[in-house]
Length: 183
Image (cartoon, rainbow, N blue to C red):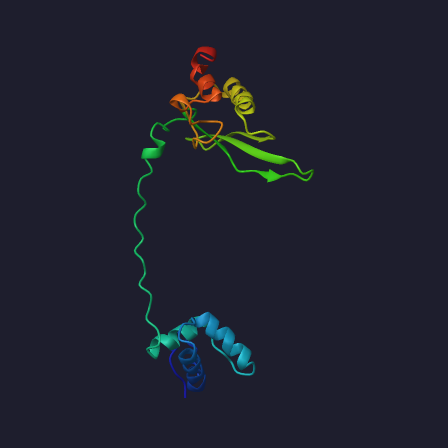
């Protein structure tokens, strides 16, 4: 005698279905994959069905409830953070990507500079010191190569912002004067 899983073309013997049901009643919080692994371990000689077949057996015997599928929401437009990114070289994004220790035991701080419109990586530099002086050198070389962007976005961490007057750092002050240096 065979039971549930008929639509897949593979009928599970009622004896095996009963094993699945018994295991589920002993462990009501276990899902099909965990139940299958448990049954394979206990009954290595028996043909234990797949986790999906076990799920169908549990559903057919009223021992599980199908999950409600979440409706996927349409992605909300990401206009606000990227307003003004309507052409290359308008907005650049700068950020330190954490740090790691190199093979010789030195801390390395990777700095990335990306064009927000094209997603082009303008710079990816490894710095030993994540300070404004080193960032200024990298930005200056990028300005010479690509010109000045309209805006530069950062996460507001050091060395890009501070808690001082007007939240400006020496790097911020230097950047504010760049339109006079690089026309």
